[in-house]
Amino acid sequence: MEIILVVSFSYLSGSIPFGLILTKFFGGQDIRKIGSGNIGATNVLRTGNKFLAALTLVLDILKGYMPVIISLQYFPELIQLSCLLAFLGHIFPVWLKFNGGKGVATYLGILLALSIQLGLLFIFTWMVVSLIFKYSSVSSMFASLTVFVIYTVREIAGPIFKIMSDQTFKTYEIASLSLLLFIFFILIIFTHRKNISNLKNKTEHKIKI
Image (tube, one colour):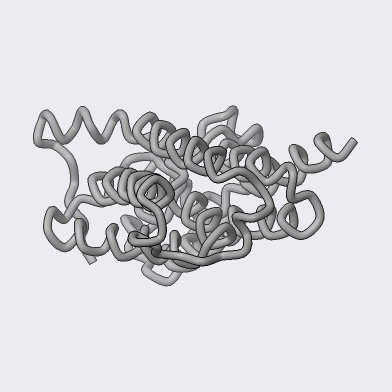
């Protein structure tokens, strides 16, 4: 029963298409017919409404953050499942025929729920890479890889590379979190497969703010 409950509220939370809802309600536009057709904050920004883009970003972060926080409090043994289902809810929402977003903001929300340090590491890496290359897709993929590598190296190398001291990780196996972060990295590569093709063809759009 607990598994069904965690799967349900984690997936349903992650599946809420805030980008689509906000642009339709406030702008009368279907975000799926604009830019890349993605429902995330980056594509919402292409409508020219920075406020809606920022609001979409915050809400997409929260829909990853909230179910994981709840699971940590009440179902710590199912935390990996909650993380994964919240993310899958965003990229495969039942309401949109399983055609959702790339999951980056939701992934950040999950990271912040697990560890503030991991979340800040992702944000810092994303910002640095975006300033250098100006591509949101490259920043997202590189930042997710960095989180996985840094966390894994820290655990293998020991205290000398200690970056974080969250008590959160005492509730489940370190190796499981490392595997989960690797799965997220692979899924983010998957959701950015079109961007990778665009990068190869030099047709990928740069960040414009």
